[in-house]
Length: 70
Image 1: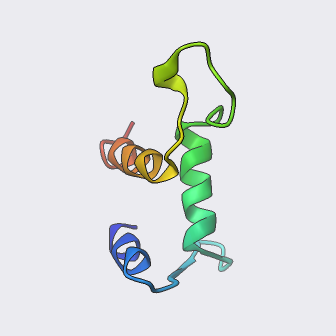
Image 2: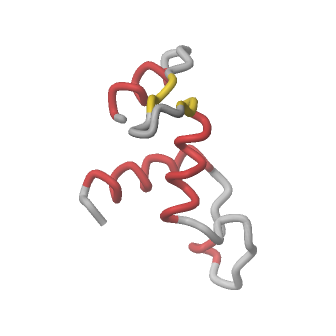
């Protein structure tokens, strides 16, 4: 996942082959990752720190959480 992230950030379009033989592209994987860690990311909160404007920052946080096994 981290290698594909590097390639994606450098202009390539990696495809991930899943255990069942299906495949998804990097954008789909990123959306799955965000849905796992930030399912309510598009809702507006009264707490400013819970309002996410930068999806790239959310990607970085989600990768860190995923690497930590959380």
